Image 1 (cartoon, rainbow, N blue to C red):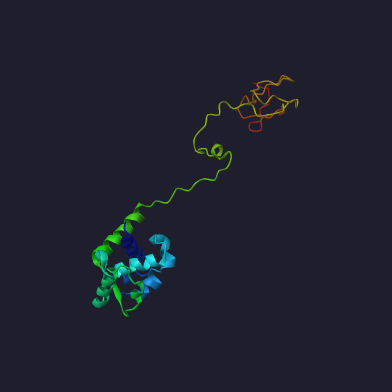
Image 2 (cartoon, one colour; image 1 turned 90 degrees about the vertical axis):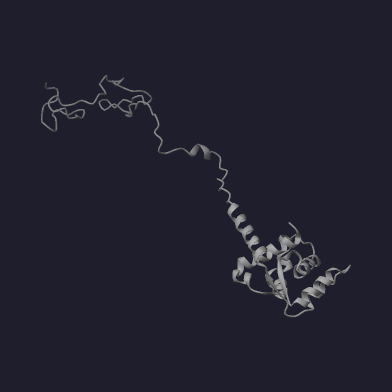
Length: 211
């Protein structure tokens, strides 16, 4: 991309971002230089090292080079062309004419706008990065994925009959202290669960131990 093309595209981009209606209206040369595309605010994007480089590209644009703009009045454009042909162009000539206006030509304007749209469409914001926290990967598990926990072991830690401690790391069928069965007793008549020490079923009144 040439300096002149980069300058024109930046001019179009600044207008499209602030006042798109002005893209199709004559632009005073002073507005372009001072407000729309000032050197200090755009020098990095234009890749121009000095203000003299900026004024030289602007003079080329106003002279009609590249066919990007139409400059009026015509005598001003002709003078710009003549000055560019001199061995050492006087850049101050840009301010020797009053009421010089630039109109962006339709075809290069359309190309510049299409280029901006393609660049925006091709941009994809980066995916957010998770913070680097030790152990984070271990915490990221599928909560709805079933896991095979294996058989459920006896959870009681004391015998209901003698109060002795029961091993918690294995299934227990009988108390190792008093020998009582750990199987939940049931009523022989209605099969309801019975608590240790009960003499009668709370549902049907059958005496515990009767058969």
